[in-house]
Image 1 (tube, rainbow, N blue to C red):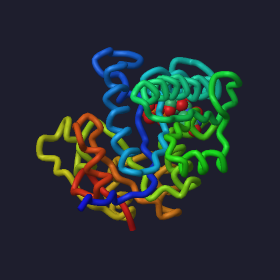
Image 2: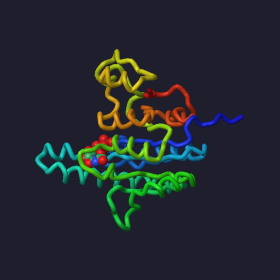
Image 3: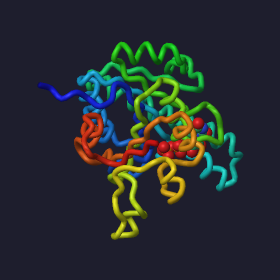
Length: 239
Ligand code: UDP
């Protein structure tokens, strides 16, 4: 008997930084290809996959503002950076023979589709991967907020946040060797212990709409599939 996936529809959040790989800047096509292969496995299991992709590997509005640029313009550039990453991800998925569409919250006629809620739902139902780019379309937000927003809109069973570490720890595992991985947390515990999961706007949006958050390591081969199959992997945050 084939084990059934735990989730029917998910929103996968990929940070821009995760795409850098060995390149140091921009996008490493090898990383994209590996991600596309892992996403393909989910589609083949019958899981509907929406993706929100970040842009931190190219531009972040806050960083540009620190260097003297107008914040709103910087955020526009950040959102366009997410769309560039989205184009690369769509291309990688197509090369892996996965049917994928790219919807941007900022209209880019001739380059990709514009975000449309009803259309996104029907594409997901047809088994197509939908990549949501340009964040929420508004400055002063992050792509984590976009991931929770789109996750709630498409009625995803969970938002799967891909990171460089195995999940949420008691402290930063990069600087504290005694940091312990936490497998299960409530939204309340995350807030009380001030654990770093997402920015507060994104996190409270997920909490207020009871959208479970699963944090896992995208650099660990098979971790995404483990999450989908309901195995003990990463950290689950729920009520
Ligand atoms: N951004 C924005 N509105 C949004 C989402 C993103 O203005 O709804 C801009 C913001 O400047 C942000 C950049 O796009 O810094 C890239 O997104 P993010 O920093 O979330 O990317 P990640 O850290 O996931 O790579």
